[in-house]
Amino acid sequence: MSEKLIVSWEEYNKIVEKLAISIDESGYNPTLLVGIMRGAAPMIDVLSRIFKLKCAYLAVESYSGRGKEDEQGDIVFSREMSSITNIVGRILLCDDLSDTGITLNKSIDWLQNYKPIKGKIESIKTATLWKKNKSTFEPDYCAARLPDDPWIVQPFEHYEEITIKDIKQKHNK
View (cartoon, helix red, strand yellow):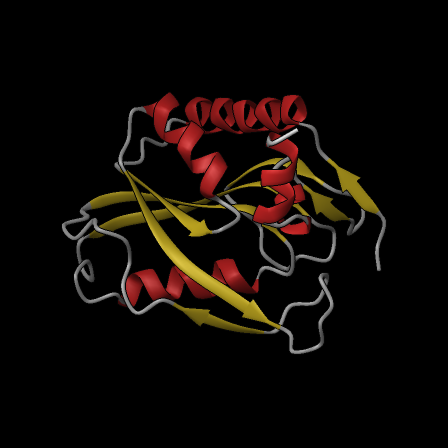
């Protein structure tokens, strides 16, 4: 496995703010934020508060079938997007990182062909916090372009390693 880039909450918040500044200074004014779940959940929450925009969520999963955390497999989309049904205008598609670029490319295609909004989209631009070196996708906005391909450990990911039983024990001390 690759080296790990461990990100604290302070670093995470700074990189989201850096991304927001980049978007603002570009002059692009999205009318809706679309987050690729789960990775985009925390960043899109902050960006929606900064830009005072509504959010929609697109559930996308990747299965490698190999049990390895740093390998991407088949991309599976949810049947529907979250509750936003009358999206019109400029979409900012957000994900935490561009790893290979496959998820972002396929998500753009999915959005352009999603029946409730097909033909109502003026533009789709993309935003990521990180872009790995191996990624073939170039986001429109990216807070950090990495010179290599580390496994990024975001501040909320420790919850994947613990159970609700662990949390109960911690709080019942």
